[in-house]
Length: 546
Image (cartoon, rainbow, N blue to C red; front, side, top):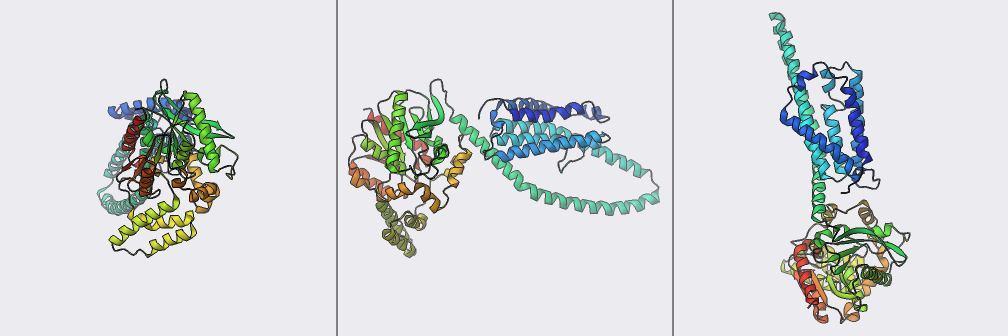
């Protein structure tokens, strides 16, 4: 949600006001008779809606054209409706300018002079992801469309009354014959009308439902925006590209106090940036910490902003160098000698290695869904699923075959087959939908979605992340990182078998690290139980100050 002048809003208002100005001098005969009987409540809502819409569509720059926006279709539809609105007025100005001419439907829209612009503003609000414009359009619609529907009802009632009076003047015999014919014709017309209404309802129902879902999503997104809002006089809320070695890389920095300790959050994957959804857990940390999220080299917005489209420079060693460059940048900017490193999944491998190599720059390390070793994690996953499958009396042949195949091939794809059969026994009760979390994020953009569509298949994933995945297949923290010179903490969900919770637990005991397991959560424990996760983080980090 961004303040700023909207030229799109200005164009829409011009398309709205110009024909209305011309209409003021070309009103239908007897229009004043109807306007004097307008419902006062509807009239108040109409006036409030007019003021709100006029102001709001001009002050939010989100209304302007954003060609790469996922929501651009709504803007196109809004202007199609406004073009129809102009056509409606052209038809009216060319007509006899009667009340009937003014209130006859146009392009399938009843009271088109009222409904078309209101729906257009509603669609503009959805496009701008602005609940205020949407609410203003609804208020305007209730008042404006309501008033004109009442006018249409009055016109129809007068037409029926006139027709009845004309029929009353006919002779009794003619009237009797006419009644029989009219009755048959009326029944036939009513039947056709009913069928049309049913068809129209069936066709419109999914459209209306989709619009409602979009409005709800916009509302939730705006709610998340205000919940995440930071007073930047004392705190910081920025997103930008920073030069890290040979690339400009995307980061976000959020915190309510610029002097607070800095946490760098390293996402997993590799190649799975989640900056757009980190608000879910960082909102519970930003009162006490400045949290930095980063789209690492070769993925997300960083990938889109650089020329290395084949990820030739993406290696684990380069990732470590990038982390070091980011730590130096943040240390210099915020005047802190040491930074807290937090890593999730693959990010826990990257973060733990950095903390191990650079204790002089690391205040503490927090591993979320800590990865230890691919083979030992797969074995833990298999053995737990096998035990539960046997207890349930299920056939375990496919599960066992998948594990044996992994032991033989030792590939990412073979490891995924274990998960395919084991997932039935590893349901996380408190697991939240990460896709939904992302979609209602106040920062989610087309770039985020575009990146993920580039690696939907296993082949594409390995194309961009193959070097690091090959490294992960061989890494074993039990052999390379048996002790740390900085405080180390691990947090996992009890149902995390992507990076097996039992494997983490064993490694934590080996290195003497404090670990916490949150019941019912999966691999994204920080998204599943953000408040509980943040509470543990604060308690852990408090220990480093003692």
